Image 1 (tube, helix red, strand yellow):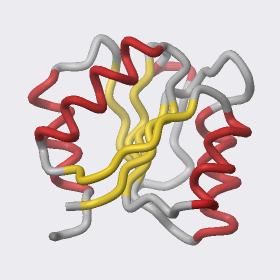
Image 2: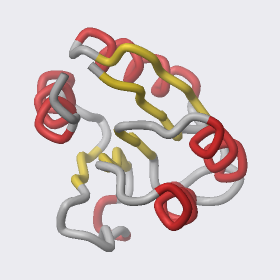
Image 3: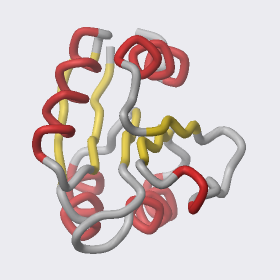
Image 4: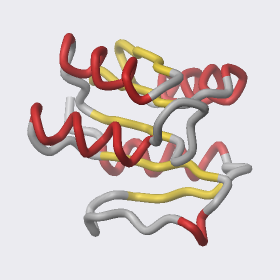
Length: 117
């Protein structure tokens, strides 16, 4: 279906999300655990979808998304955060799910924002 960039500093959560989106049709997946890595990976290979945590050990998911889309254009984004009250996405097209995330809801949301095959 598409290439996905997962921006998440908790490896277990990133791996779990990767498994879910792969089962939902993602063909390739890159994972980044900090803002700088996320930007570098996205510019090296433009993702069709970005799934990002809000708070990272180094940088933030929203800052990474802003930097990526400023250079690569608009990309569908799904934020998965444990701090939903502290975060408001900048665009109404951006989706937000709260941790712990329901697997079926994440898959359904991914399929809704991913470009058609």
